[in-house]
Picture (tube, rainbow, N blue to C red):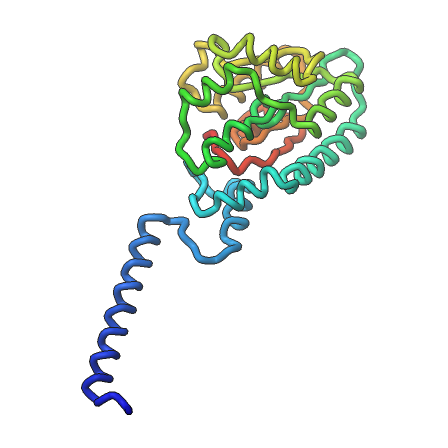
Length: 256
C-alpha cells in the first residue's frame, strides 16, 4: 500500500536533513584537514608537489597518505627512482675531464642521501607523526642507518674517477661526530676527503645559509664543485651550489 502523502513529506524532510548534516560534516573535515581528499590519486600528486618543491612549507605527511608513502618507500618505487637519478649522475660524471690537481669535488649530503633513516621513520608513520627531535637524536646515536646502495655505488665510482668527496651534513658536530663517522664507515663510505658537520658557529642558521657558506669556503679553498647531491632542496639551494645538482626523493620530511 502506498504511503500517505503526509508520510512521504516526512521521509523527504528527514532525508534532506540527513544530507545537510553529512554535507556539514564533510566540510568540517576538509576545513580541519587541508589535505583531505577522497581522490585516491591525491597522494601521488602531493608527493610530486613535494619533490618539485611546490608544496611549501609542510611539516608532516597527510595522515591518509600513510599507506601510499609506505608503499612508495619500501615496495620498490623509491629504489627505482634513486637508480634513475644515479644513472644520470654517472652519465654526467663520465663526461667530466678532471684538471688533475686534486681539486675537482662533489658535495654530498649524509642523512637519507648516503645513509637511510627509513627504519626510524617507519616508527613515525613515515612522516605522518610530527618531527620528534629527542627520538631522532636517540636513533642517530645508535648508528644503525643503512647505506643507500645506488648512492654508495656512485660514491665509489666518483672516488675511483679521482674526485674528492666532501660530505656535508646538518648533524650537530658536538653530538654526532664520532657515531656518524663510524656509521658511514660501517656502511662502506670510506675514502671521502672530508666530513663537515654543523658546529657552534652555525647553530640557528637555516640549512640553506649554513650549506651555502660551507660550499663558498670550499670554493675559496680552490675546490671546483662539479656535483651536489641531497634529498632536501635546502641541500641544493643558495650560493655555490655546484655545476650540477641532483635531488634525491624524500617524501617523509622537509628541512627548510
